[in-house]
Image 1 (cartoon, one colour):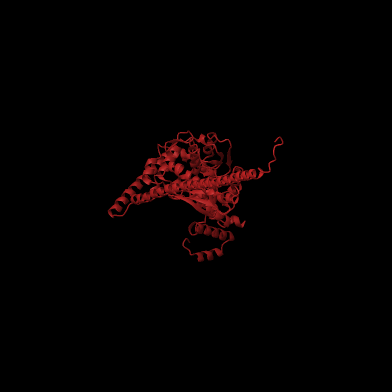
Image 2 (cartoon, rainbow over the protein chains, first blue to last red):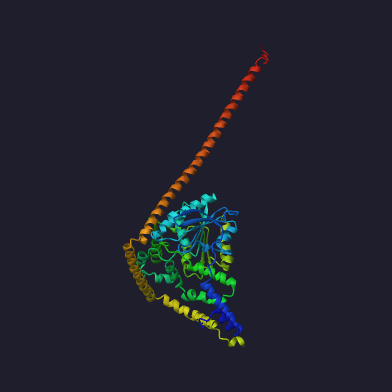
Length: 362
Length: 150
């Protein structure tokens, strides 16, 4: 039965009840999606490259579209993802949504680090890459001030940049599911305990930490939901084209990561997860103390209630540390990924950011 | 009735999955949160890394014997290129600064020219006024009525 050719199988099905035929077609489609179908197209909003540095690129989106909001917006995403996570597909893209609303949107693409980038540290990103990207955005837009949006680790990097460079003309800061306090990072606190997790051996051996290793750690937080869930839901709804399209995009989003540069990973695990230095003003970047209280820009801090990677408790703690007078914390009903993409994100997250930024971007 | 009599293997699997997820996710979460589990993960990690180290050193030895560059050697060439690019970036920034300084200089020069022109015009106006005054006083002299007491 297992090796029956398709034609014979269909002949066999002819004599079977309608339900069986439907189920068979659904499984067949699910199997095709998993094995044969090409990956979905992502990152389709038109863009131009305005600056490059090593593997990083700075994009300006929809340059020919009229910009009705004067303050440009620079997006900074996590080091472990690819740039399209904020521009997944038309209708499910924060970049597209904001450019359509008249924002001048820029994004710093980190690129894919090679073995030669294993010495890259947070210091390099925070002091060399982001400030220079800000300068380029200001030059290109011809404006004197800027808004920054950081997602996940990108938000943590953004907060450090803002804290270390109070001279930078940052008017608005938007953080999306970015961890700041690591005193209770859920299961990660236990797994990354320095008594068991051999961080130095890992970085020294691997150089850069592979995307699969990072993905494994994230998926292990909810193993049944993350490993079996997608297959079960696909097999259940493979006959729904709209569902299949979204499913494929989401799977690509989740599985398509980049390696974590070795030294940055060592810092991330040791100084953030294991020693929780940032929130306690104990973090030093190239010898400079990082004080989150130096942040005075307007802040919108977004957390997701089902986020297991950046737990709301980790993100909310920022609010008491910063000196901003205009600061808002929003807890959305979403997960770490669904806060950025999908129908619900387009209905809730995007308008929230757009409305908050609009009144602060003139 | 017909539907009930059909045994759909997937429906069965899905039911098992849903029950597993609902009933066991909490138990799994509890297990994952145990210190023993973290210890186990650490041991698995150590084993994996030792294996990786062995593979790497063996590969490196093999490549050296064949006189083929290793990953380390190729990446050091890439680092040289990156360093060079960094220098170009610094030069680019300096050119940017110089160009923007040049713009300021150009503006200052324009202002200087404008001021010079204004200065000239002012001189011309003053000259014209003074000439006008002179010619006015010269033409009015003979017609000036004599004081009455003369």
